[in-house]
Structure formats: structure tokens, C-alpha cells
Image (cartoon, rainbow, N blue to C red):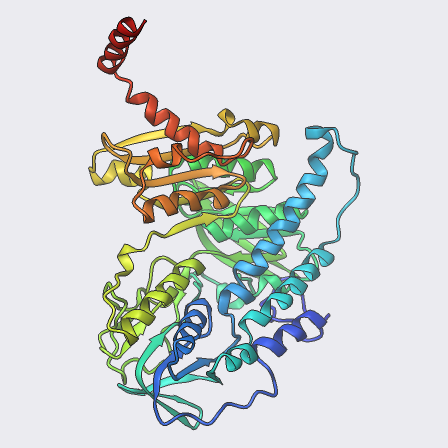
Amino acid sequence: MNVDTRIGTVPTLLTDDAHDQRLREQVRPPSWVNPTPAARYHLVVIGAGTGGLVTAAAAAGLGARVALVERHLMGGDCLNVGCVPSKAVIRAARAWHETRTAAARFGGPPVHGDGDFSAAMERMRKVRADLSVIDSAARFRDLGVDVFLGEGRFVADDAVRVGEQRLVFRRSVIATGARATVPSIAGLSDIPFFTNETIFSLTRRPTHLVVVGGGPIGCELGQAFARLGTRVTLLNRDAQLLPRESVEAAKIVEQALAHDGVRILHDVQIERVTKSALFAHVDVRYGGVTETFTTDALLLAVGRTPNVQDLGLDAAHVTFDVTRGVHVNDRLRSSNRRIYAVGDVCSTLQFTHAADFQARLVVQNALFFGRGKASALVTPRVTFTSPEVASVGMSENDAHTSGVPTDMVTVPLHDVDRARLDDETEGFCRMVLAQGTDRILGATIVAEHAGENIGEVVLAMTAKLGLGAIGRTMHPYPTQGEMLRKSADVWRRRKLTPTVKSLFARYFRWFG
């Protein structure tokens, strides 16, 4: 395959791989011919990632004339360089880990030797290509959407130009997403490096991966590559991993990564990077110590930058900045009353599911004079390490700093039978409740299947159901979802105050 897997910025898609060729035929067909524009569109959507695709499909399904513009690959980050490839790689890494540890944990057969990294990556590319049909240009054309592949740029308050074609609209939605942030580091411009946008084109395993960044992407890929047999060093500029999560949750993830062989350094300042032959040298300072790491793969995972460049936003009188992206109000409308935005280009909630639900909201607000508010959406987040960290609403940190009176209910995973049966007891379920009530303000779950279990909490919060309602719901046994019912049991037992217990005692003396 024509990709240099030593150290370098590799192409997003491989040019001579059958799976990537199939993917390209779906999301960027070489033979695609843009349609003749309609005289005027009800909606022009710029960006065919999750937010743009959901917006376009929903509006067209309701009968609107819709144009969808994409300058790169339909499906956006999620399909091509984000959720889909990363979770496929993580699943392969988990399988390798379970195979290696089966003998010690479950009496499984002893396993010797190495795995096939290239086969694991090929499986990822195959699954990605299989899923790409859903986001394909042909599918959206068949849904009634005019699909334009090329650079979209505003040229007026009510018009977008793609090549020589002018698309006039009543409303428009900016859904251009975000890209990996490249930090300012001395010498970095001379060093080829990876981001999430390029690392999934690897076909040969790096010997030593240096990850810059201790957020979700850095932790997920650092652990995955370590389990796949790469030596991994993670350089974290903060005092803890996953700074948005509680100290306890972050510590459990750090211990898991360290157990898998990831070396983690905190409060790191990168002084410079240099290149020699096939390697990069990263000079760092931490805790008064200086050290140089030699690596054949440098991965930058330090955040996301909204894609607002080259969109002609000034011509459309849309207010924006390069850090926050497009400025929108709570109804996702920009400073131009005709133009809205969804997803990473305008929101700090940079998740596929957040873009999905913002898109549903913006179709109502833009085309049907809706009054829906983005702040009313209950948005969970999940870091797909092992164990996973899933959170929604107010965290323990938020409760301590906000001054809002709260009660905490915590169930250690060790108290959940299924977790013990599965040998997955590192973690907990913590509910943040409005003080003196069962109203759920937020929750954090640290567990192997935290992402699957947080949905029940999101449902309860969305439907304004208290923790007591979860406790009254019969959960199958044995499942890890029992942690939620047990949380309700803990809350209910707290209601048995000495006064209540004395009343029960008097009742049973009378009843007896």
C-alpha cells in the first residue's frame, strides 16, 4: 500500500485499498456531476457530516427543496476519521486484550505470539466502507436532496456559490464541523505528525507512539494502540486525564491505561520537536525534569478547532471567531436571521449525537418558526476507554463549584453482581440529585458498558422522571444495568430517617 507508516502525515484514505476505494465511491464519487440548481431553495446546508446530513434528510422528508454542499467526504468526521474508525480499532484492541488475559482471568487457553495489526486496520476500513452507504451522495440524491460536491461559500445574505453555481435560499444551515487543533510547538512545522484525521490510514504498527493530549481522543487511542502492541507515552498538559470528569473517574481511567502499558506524564510542557532519519524527538519538561522521547509516530490530540475558514461568513453578515466558531443563540440562529448552525462549528458539545439532535431542532426553528432551545437538550458524553466514562448533566465537580444544594448517591461497581461475574469491578455509578429529592441533576458512570447504561438516565432526565422511577422499573438480573436500580435503593434507604423508623416501629407494635 502506498502509505508511509513511519512518521508522517498520511492520506485520509488509502489510494490503492479496495475498501477505501469503495468508501470513496460512496462519499466522494469521482464521476459525480452536480445538479442544476433550483431557482430558490427552502434550505441550503453546508457540510455533510452528521449535523448536515440529518438536517438535509429531515427537511427533504417534509417536502422542502434542499441543497447539501460538501467540500470533502460525505459523512464528515464521524464516518471517515472519528466515531466509526476509532470504535472499530478500539474493539479490535479489546479483543486482543481479552485474548491475552483470558488464561489468568478465566482459565482460558494460554496465548503466545503477536496479532496482525494490518488485519485489524483492514477490518476497520471494511466496516467503514460497509456503513458509508447510509451517508452516500447517491442515497441523499434519492431522498430528494440536491447534492453539490465542492467548496461552498456565502456570497450574499441569501446565497451560496459552489464553483460557478449560485444557490439562493430562504434559510441556510452551517454544519461544517471542526478539525484537529495543531498546537504551537517549536519545530512542529518541520515534523510530519498524525491527528485523528490521518492515523486511521496506518497499515503497519508504530513501534513507539507519543500522544500529546489527555482528553478523550488521546486516552482512547493511547490505550487502543498499547493493547495492539505499540509502546505508548501520553503527554498530558493538565494535572489529570479527562479534565471534564471527576478526579475519581479520571484516576480509574489512568490506572487502567497504566495497567495496559501506557506511560502517562502530567503537567507537561513540550519544549520542541526535531527530526532525524525515521524518527521524531520530543523534548519535554515536567516537574522540574527534562526528558527527550524518540518516536516513530507522533499523535496530536489536544482539541478541536471549528471550521469557519473560507466560508464567506463576512459576506453573509454572520458573526464568528476562530475559537468559538459561529456565534448562535439558544435557538441556533446566527447573527443573520436566515442562517443557522449546528454541531461542532458552533457548539462546545462536540459529539455526533449532539449534532444529530441540534439538527432536528434547527429544522423546526428554521422552517417552521419553532422556538426550541438547544439548552433544553439533555446531552450525554462517553469516553470509550476501558472502562468507559459516561456522564450527563451536572457532575460532582459542578455540584461542588456551583453552590447548588445536592445529594450524591454512589454505587461501587464491586457491589454489582454482573460486574463481579465479568471481572469488571473497577468503576462506580454516581447520581447527583437535587437536595432532599429524587430529581436527577446529573450522573457519572465508570464501567465497561457505561455508554450503554447512561441512556436510561438520559431518558429519566428528559422525561423528568426521578431516581425513584428507575427504582420502580424491573431490571433483568444479572446485568450491569442493576447499578441504576441499586442507586435508587440507596436513595430510598436514606429516606428511612430515625423519625420514620420510629413511626414504623409504632405501626408494627400496633399491627402485631
